[in-house]
Image (cartoon, rainbow, N blue to C red; front, side, top):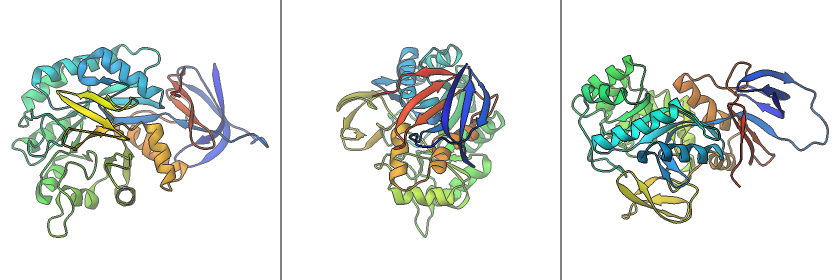
Length: 365
């Protein structure tokens, strides 16, 4: 049995205590706070529902690449994730999903738990690809059924204005799959129709969607008016901190994602993103024409960014952990019986310890 002691952080309160665990949390005990010890904070592990790669690996490249990505992000505090595909020819999507399924079914030590797949495309608007390769398809329930047989697909990003999209949204909702609007040129009315058909979330809010305008509110306007759930990339490049705060105040369940690609954690240079080559320069990742192409963010870095922008520790916990878990209906938190997925932060909120299913993971230096 292992235990960690420090300031326990939950969405509702913080207190000095101890968590005792093996693969699952066995007990959580409040303790008298000692005098004179440096503070350290114990939180549920970070949860990332939108990432393509990291540590040089692109999850489109199959099982070993997914494992490499999962090990990399575990060292940065992410204890559970969705491996996210890009738009690609159907046979490449099939191979990628089979690789993701293999990791879901046979997890290995040192890896973040891969909960399934986030299918970003192929049912997106070919005129709003962003950094997605040009292999968009019209929404098809038959194609979706086929892909769902290959891997547990938990989230699908699509464009609600496409022919057949509303029918596909209703089908996915009935299957328990979360549908998000993204890579879309939908009008406000088209986005509203997607929302009413069952699309709950919004993918990398503000990016690759029709912006807010006072005469045509677009997808962003519909989201700000009606959304309960939205993901944002808090890297300081994709969305201005003031815009992040606007969404945080407006959308009740706003959570952080990295949208990380293979370049995360790597030096400047060229890296794969599906069939594309992308380029890491400074803290960003770009296509050759300068288009943002995912990010080099990790969730421990997101914690630092959010802290610098004025968010308190409990709000940071909600954004990087508890809300994403809640979105998937995943048991997660500092409660007996929950999986022992934990992170420990020091006084500066730097990551110092990570546990996945009770196993300690070496933290990235």
